[in-house]
Length: 172
Image (cartoon, rainbow, N blue to C red; front, side, top):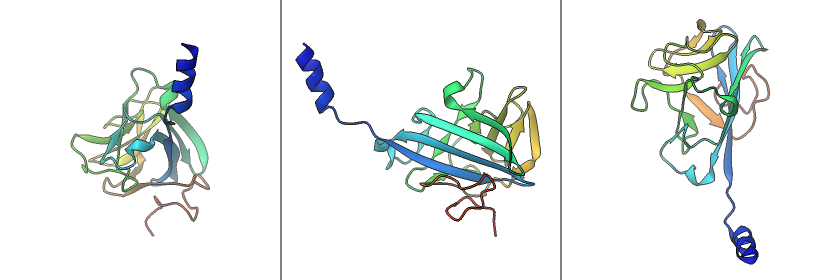
């Protein structure tokens, strides 16, 4: 029996994870950095959702100062958590590019007001891409819903989304 288990462990195909990073630039000095992992086998999938993601972390900033973090590992049962991602394009769809009323809800639903006291979250839907902080919609953080939101293979170089490798930069 031990030999059978050892053989199975040694001959099993390794499970690799794709790792992507992102940096989102909102309005009025609001930015977000993050990373997520999902199985390598999904790199060619048309879309992945929160059910496919194995690790996800985000951090929000105002003028470079941390205002909050959120991750799926410490997610509370009532935290909003839905995600859509196009791995072939390395793109988080926005502005109705996928069916349903909201495209991204990372501890913030479509109203961007459901993060709890002392918490922070991000929402992208058909009205805007914006933050929730302490249960309040941070309207001034928002950008138009159609702004592209891309992922990248390298980690952000700064929370202002101004580094040379960043793809989700502010419009120039």
